[in-house]
Length: 398
Image (cartoon, rainbow, N blue to C red):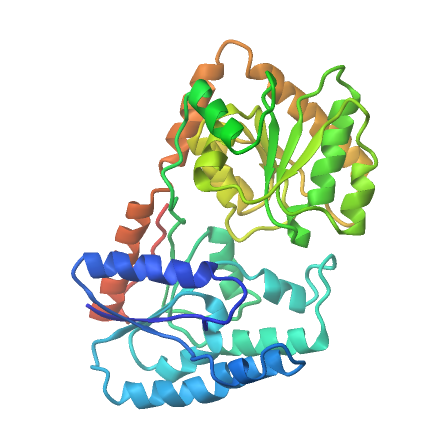
């Protein structure tokens, strides 16, 4: 196959999507396919970097100059080329190739949901609302999608307003070989990283400082748990140093015997070691596109407490423990008390008979999130779109 990957510009703050595109593209190249990458150049943005016009200059690069470049390149692209959009946020470029073979990778629609007023915790500016509608106008014209979860697939069709010929769910695959690490080895890795936790297994939370990570809720849950224990396990927050008022206020509720530690700059090996010795991962997000830490933790045998809402319960499966979604109208103290009870029971169960079997089941569940398996499913969809985009029926891979 001849594949062209549409990618975000190099001046984007987050490089996770460009890395995703390169990972998939290089995998396809290793499988014998021709691969090229198309992305906006840093022209106007570079000239106005550091000024108030920086963002708008970047839009000129993306939505004025780049489409002109794409139209020029399309004149020389063969008719059998498949155009792959690594993110639905690249939607404004979809109309340029809507009459050619194409597929759009859809990760999450949180920004669109916020722009439509569906997430009151995350209000969007007027310009952000217009921008998200512009993105939706573009990707809704696509005929083929690959979504990371069934929730994302459903949302593409509902408020995403897409009416695709095919819509395929392919779970993300782990891009690092997370697996259980022997306790002695894990403790040595943690000690080298400056993370010494003593004899107690820490409670982990892994996430950024985005509103949907529910950082304040995690800390309030831990505070309630710690208040009921003479010697509670410490909480390790693998996340940025707190600055939001709600998180700082939550920290004030932690009792003296509780310990909350924020950790940054953690590499994959150190995180693997932390998962391997942790008593539990706390991951009660308000929303997610996928939920990587759930899979990472389970791959290392670590118990997981997450939210009983898609896609978290879709990813966590039967081997995770669940809390109700914390809604804006809920009493957070009551929610935290309920979560503290679940956490205490889970930590106690880890010391009882059957813990080893539960650990094996978590590891087995996580094995379905295999990177090479995801790549093979991508290739299968790509081939199907290339061969007959009009006859491929909706496929669900899980």
